[in-house]
Amino acid sequence: MRAAGRGTAVHIGGCQLAARPRKPISREEARRALTDGGRRACEICRPDSEPGILD
Image 1: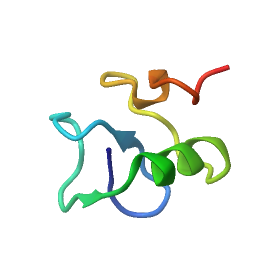
Image 2: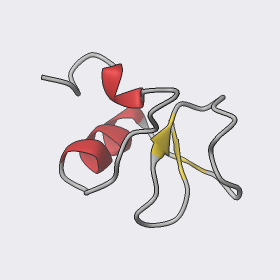
Image 3: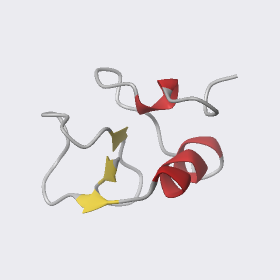
């Protein structure tokens, strides 16, 4: 998973919509960013569809 600066979307690693520069993050960091960190999931690559993130 990847995230750019604060307040941006979380993307799956190969997503072409991810802004540059990218910052690789762990699956756990992505899960926290999407659930508690106020970041949104990219509507194209849908990192929130990973098991354990969507309820």
